[in-house]
Image 1 (cartoon, rainbow, N blue to C red):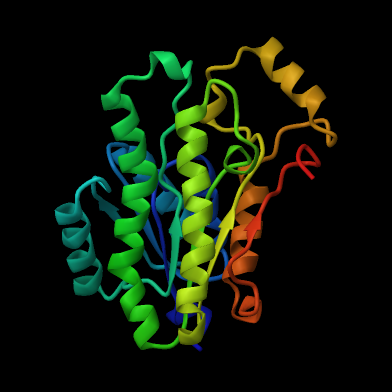
Image 2 (cartoon, helix red, strand yellow; image 1 turned 90 degrees about the vertical axis):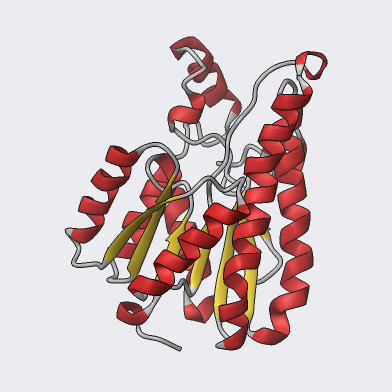
Length: 248
């Protein structure tokens, strides 16, 4: 088991929202942080600056997670700089809103490629080192819709349901190697992914949630951090849903 200062975490899709909050949470205890992004270069750099303000060592990397070639190049960069992850947080994902009857084959393939294929490729690429060192944490960011499904979000719900099944199955496969695999499935979180809702719709959504409000990204980050701790080693194969009592 490494000290926090020797432990490295890779967070995909960490240039904003939940991913950025997760990066800052790990940086706050002095872990080495890898911030992955696709297009948001300046946003990723801003997150990196915040992480470095805690004294954490930080590396930013860009890669299209739909491409195994780009993920392998990202791995080479991490290895070159001594940032191979002990903790992998598969957070990158895209949403899709609309009736299933209106979904094109291209839209279906794109959401599947980012939310499922990208998660699979990243996990496959980085888990071998965890297995070799007999220690690691893989944490997948899912959604409440992967548990209950959502009207007009069939494609997105399908990917998150698949992610949950992937989590449970891989947890059994890696448990003998000291590597845990869990998923965090948040309810409604106050991020740009809810920007398609106007203020009236957001208020209506908050009324549906027993806690009476949206979650903050930092609250999700705290749960991810807890699952990643060495003392959380008996938690594996779990889909944990912080949702304010919305789904019980």
